[in-house]
Length: 227
Ligand code: NI
Image (cartoon, rainbow, N blue to C red; front, side, top):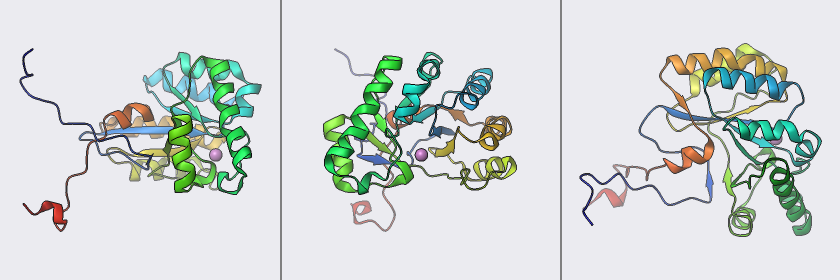
């Protein structure tokens, strides 16, 4: 065996949860929650396909059970499909057995529709705690994915606002939150995606972004920075 000429920078160890990733180039992950929606998700998939952009869809289990063909299309077109619970409750308010049902039923519905087992999970409302994160990591093999860019598209149903917020705030390693159940959000995507692409951004799935995550550089004030 010979040593490689230049060893690649080591990947950071997998973390229990992520708001964003530390990457060295202009790469972001677009994420779309709460679908699949019978009309809007296919329309969004067409927009992504036209631009050769890969995204991540955090789907609700009962919607997958209702629209399995759309879930399958998400996977067939190279996107990541991932768990967003069965019925969108605040997970932190559930009994342990109700929590388990929300997660397991959704994993099973996704696998039945697409053949894919989820490896990431987004808690509804971002409501999570360390104990539930540990259960998701250890019992279900799910990394918890939050976000670093939030256009509040569920509240402000204006495409100009959604695209403006995302374009202004996206940065290398951003995880961008949006919802493919609102027409205003889907309508915002052509301008959003085109603007980010023209700024040199590339789009990857959340799992691909995590795989590129690098340990953060030590802060100047940190004791670790002292030899
Ligand atoms: Ni949601």
